[in-house]
Image (tube, rainbow, N blue to C red):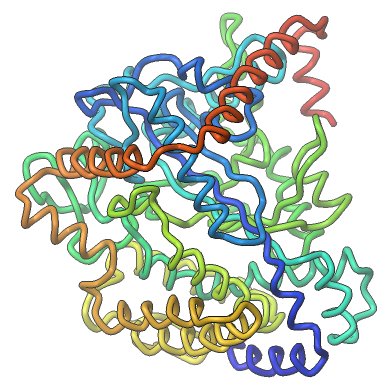
Length: 521
């Protein structure tokens, strides 16, 4: 499959359409826990000065009231996306007062789950829907899962590329169907090879012991407050992190858009006895939106998703079915606590080259056997990815982690060379070359560096991460925020609050009726 990369790049160059890869779309979503001055999860309301979490397009909350989410716009230069993400951090820090942002994926010390507030979105029907969905997540998986943070890397290819590439591929599909088909090919290859991203960029090898309360685990104590695995890369992506046992039997198919949509739709309507036992509305209070395997499609957790911007009130899966895939959302990226905003340019450039490699690596479908193999490789990497002599599975048999990684990087290098030819310079090739170094020496990976710093500093995970967060805040605060950006974000916050007030002043159907209509639509 990887051998297809060179052949497809040669075909693209021969067609003269390689310039269409200049217009890659980027957007970054980053979560961060709000903490108090002692480093505990904040119990306060989302700051009103940052706007309404219901209607603000760039600063909101995810699962818990303290789990902030920053959302950049779409840019064809990832440098602009990183700049915008930096500005959102700077603006937020300027309004947090004594509170701050936790700079790691795994949460700060949380003495009691009662300290975790579910995110609130006001009294409008849509605001209540968002809140009750999260109440359902609490009942299904526990509150602690609602404090884990990550980065979502959104990626798209120019709309003008697809008709040109379709012609090169001599496809009879419509432009929309062809783009969706090739985005799904990208997704399948991502699932095959994304273990490499977890090795290279995984940054959650340790957790506070509070996170493990009442949880069965096989972690080892590093100190009185910190647990870890010596060769772990991303505990966030392990069974300790985002997981849903009820989803294990879903067999969501990533081979085609229609099979993907059908399997998600089935899960949304499939009753699940343990969730039925929770109840839906008990003593006049909602415990969940419904008792099916998924309350809504967003509950399905995957490390990559096909996406399409939905219209107001439209469900995401319906948007995909009607208008096809518009972009993909990579969801396996840890927040790197060694970096001021958790991600940097080098990682982003590598991500672009890696994702294009997945696009050009062929269209072979995933069998159930290969899906199991992919899952097994991922489990190995997140828990023992840096272990010397680690072997991974391929369809051709076992191969060493180093050899498999070099095979992938050799193909990513071909894409990086083409991108540098298009843009000028050698930034993409430099980004790939850096990853060869991490493959050759696991001690250079973020996960290894974090463990090394924890050991050498004699600080707990809680103390070290709090210290790093203070350093990052000082770094970002030294750079003055552009007054025009500050003014724009201030106005957007005020406007979002007005939009929420307007939404709550409208005459609406009773919530029970609204919910019934929403679930039936």
